[in-house]
Length: 284
View (tube, rainbow, N blue to C red):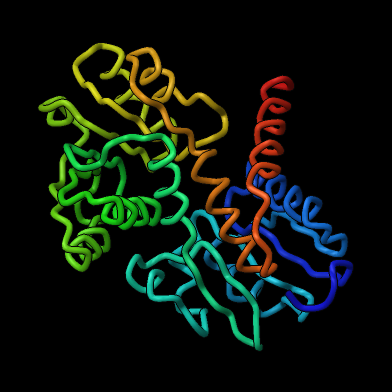
């Protein structure tokens, strides 16, 4: 970390849409707990077209950025350095400014690994991933870390899954592409991971409710509003349910450590996130 705790440093989360992001709550809670009184963290609306100009406009007081949809891939050609995991997965959710460079990192993979392990779900059987975007790629890398050898991926547009298939090949992970149809109900899934918007996963939740699809564990990367229709259906079906908040807290903790050089206060961050989600539910 450059300077002392009171040295002004700035950070933000970028994406579009971004108003819903819980990242400012999590990072600000970490700064308070760590006594980093000069640090601030905001949310900035930014799409792919605006990203180059925004990066160029940032001054030396900026410590780093968190990236969400649709910027995790768009940022890659704008980096001076990318850790090997970023290159392998093809997505960076973190940019750290250091030594005059833009350095890219991926803390999503570690966040998913930690969430899966803390939930105690097994990943060595039939695993189904919904979606083929940047988060799905991070999910595949995380599954490989936990010992998964083969995964089924449900997609609406198979031609968009080429980056995911290339990643799977580099990981030595077997992938079978399925469509959003009856094929999903062809077996009992040990784990189902949804990386798509809540509305897109509603048909899968309906299959869970109808009993035409079954899963021992369901991990929905969405965290607000919670529960999602998929998570609610999974809970009613007595599946182990993992919230996107679990992933979010741990990936944010990794970002805090990269940007500040301090160990992240995970308990304080999680408590702040839960309190904010409760506040949002109360005002809806």
